[in-house]
Length: 92
Image: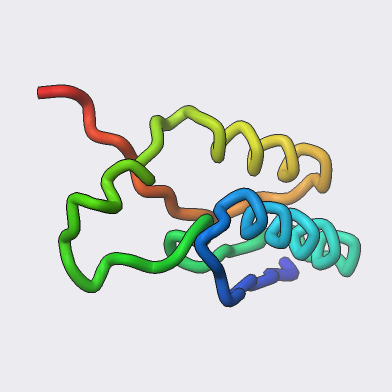
């Protein structure tokens, strides 16, 4: 099995980061990767060195926008994607 790994420098613009990842996923899938692994918390800037409530608004539901976005790319490319998301906690 051919595995592809994606590590990229991210900025604060989540949509831009996701589009750059999509481009890279498509490229390495064309090169034959069947399993593609993305870096931890790949949609934005890495913030896990401290617990900061200011980043809690980046949490998202699962399923949600990112699972829909990356699921569609995985189906399009016929690959398995391994990714991590900052999951929104259920109320209470």
